[in-house]
Amino acid sequence: MSFGFVAFHYPAPEHLEAFVKECHQVAEMSRSQPGFVSVGVWVTPDGDAVVTTGEFESEEAFQAAARIGREIGATPDGISDLEVRPREVTFLVSR
Image 1 (spheres, helix red, strand yellow):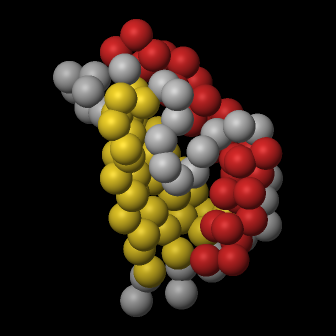
Image 2 (cartoon, helix red, strand yellow):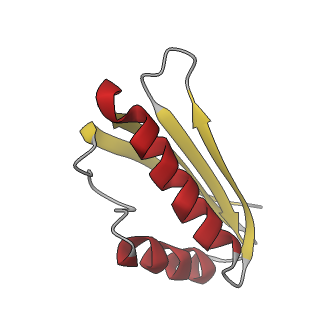
Image 3 (cartoon, helix red, strand yellow):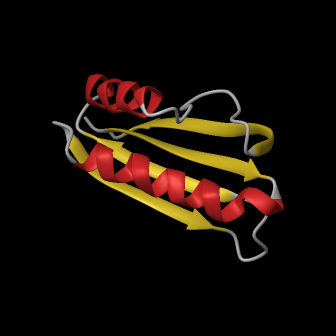
């Protein structure tokens, strides 16, 4: 059973590119983690939201990757200094 997520982030317009860059840094680090399956970084056409997606072999593998994100200063939960409102995260389990 795989574990995944879809997260909508709302960076301030002046921080959009910095936020996307940070998302790609976290994605790159996640790729090297055991249990990693896939990751995506998307921006809505209007630039109002950055959408990140991820899939891992298990919730434990996801949690390990999330710890790496915290270590580099990316906040997998809550709100970062670049965001204007809290992110919306949905966790998923394959069946």
